[in-house]
Amino acid sequence: MICLLARRAALAALLAVLLPVPGWASDRFIDYLYVDANEGGSSGGHVGLRVDDDVFHFEYRRPGMLVLQRETFGEFRHQYAGLENRTIEASRIPVSEETFSLVRERFRRRYFVQRRQLEVLETLRTERRILEQMLQGRVGAPRTPPTRPRHSRSELPDGARGNTPAASRHARWAGGA
Image (cartoon, rainbow, N blue to C red; front, top):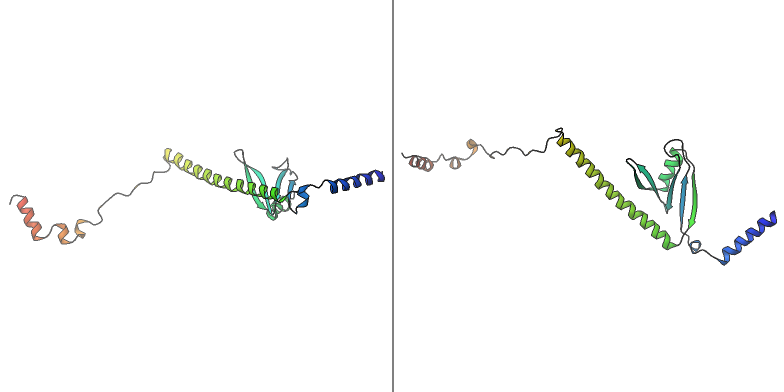
């Protein structure tokens, strides 16, 4: 039995030397994180990808949306292992520098684009609620204040009110006096 294990180990070592995997030559890796299921909402477990110190994982949001989340590994570990008391298993995947950069940038871009889309969605939902309330008469449309002169007639200077002798003469003449 020991001989068989020794032969397999020797064969594995020989293959590793003769057939190097390009990703192994790099110091870069991506961790595949599996979070054990719990008895509540995650009966199937949870997964995430750790790229550098960022963990990308999807969460379900009502009504039927999967949302990409981005957290530091410390935040992710605190939430799932610390607060929820769930085991996190990591599988380290060695990758080339090029693959590492590509995966990191794609996930970051997707995260930022999605964040902007969710902001727009929330704005549209708010505007829809306001319009529905307006249609039901619960919210009045914004009104403009009634327009009135900036000054009442008594606040105007004499020349502007028509109280000058010339204005009085004109009024009498126009009136036929």
